[in-house]
Image (cartoon, rainbow, N blue to C red; front, top):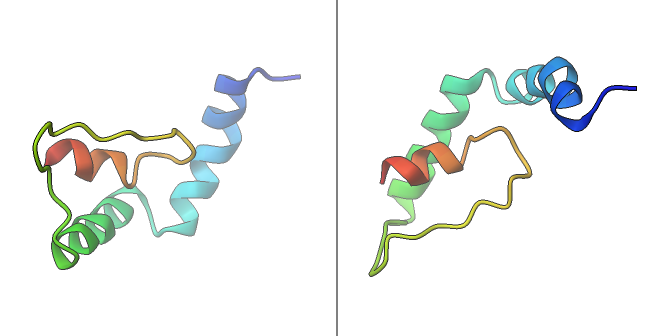
Length: 64
């Protein structure tokens, strides 16, 4: 049986990317969403990512 890291790398990452049209498309979609809804750092600039995906939200948040 694979450990969590192996399972994500070998199974889930490909599925997540495929579901959203690839990593670039997923990131672009969330960049657009954040801009549309004016989601930006306020005071501390701290954002919490619960780690339940492949980075489609955390990467654009880190860029902001």
